Length: 519
Image (cartoon, rainbow, N blue to C red; front, side):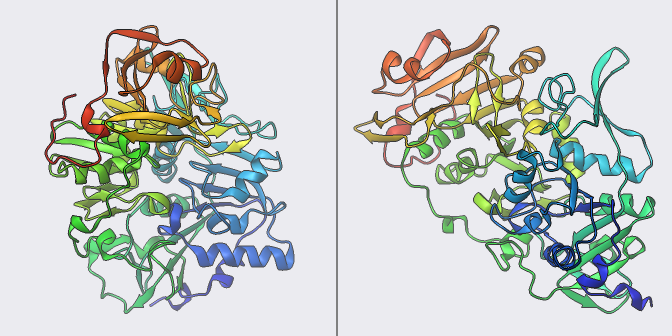
């Protein structure tokens, strides 16, 4: 038995040297977040000013949108570079990037997830179509978030006459990961986690590059007592075990057994959404759900489609798939995004993105911050605020059908739904339909080239992408096109010759079960 694998977090971070690259596992909301290691590294730096000039890699956003997660290590001097799939969960790090104090990249979550298998296998990088004609395309921004960031990590190449992007591998020295149980040899299980993530690929990559893998767990078991099929990180890859009995499943749940698959709870316990404009949008999107389809949901309004579909009695007609590797059940919203209640299966994240990238999603419902007349969508950067793309690019670019969900305007919008009609009480301060998006997270041009079906659903209007740009296809009852729609757009959409009213069921203050999915 190797006794040296059991250590505290302070012992682990003392093994980190200047200019190292640290890969942080887990996801936002505290999902599999190695919190004790992040805090220990912060304490060492604040007390000694070392180590310095580190590069951090996080495949999604590790944090709580406040001061937790990777905000613990967001200090000038400690950080030289950050390569992240999502940034909104770590506002302190995003602030360093927006102020040009660190080098900063935003690459698609799926690309980063799969890239660790390339690093582990000593391959040169990842070749993929994912990201073409979006801001990660080097002909646009190359995923660089500020002027301090100059090195190209993404390249355009031609493979057998097809245009692809090539994402370079990079050195990795340290892994911060989390599981539930470790045995004395370092074998790690994840029975209380809501997802498996990229833990195996990360551990293999760091081990094969001569680095060190540190894993935070909740408890310690005797050697040889863990079932081999439950081991997600073999002990041969693990250098240090940090036992943290107080670790919570998420920042909002100490432990929810319906997230880990230990039990299934009655779906009737899920709280119905209030009847407002957000629910109207979610219901309209739910009407598009194909029978027996594989569905992916984003955050915000689009994340509510699952709850609304359950209210509408549609939950047995499709299966949700979440990018973190969860299949089936009802995806959690808000800060716990990435978990699902009553999942059917939980697989590793790189494999989930293999399925997504190949067209496995029948319908994806995602959010919108800005849309332009060409059908380009921005959700990743608004002005100086860095949000990040997360899995958005992988999903939006490859789903057979994509629905973008959001209110028509933002910032103070007030509406009333009365007598089956939508009444605009107060218009939002900010337009979402603009001449030019701040960043291209979804390319309308690429969608037209691939023949993808794309819809934009708001509380008052529905648009589709046509050959010449956006086409207005539906309006809410009670809405006047010129006053309530066109007056609040920076561009003129085409108006369909078959323009119709949105389904009346959307504006009734009750839910009809087993509704048709045809409008």
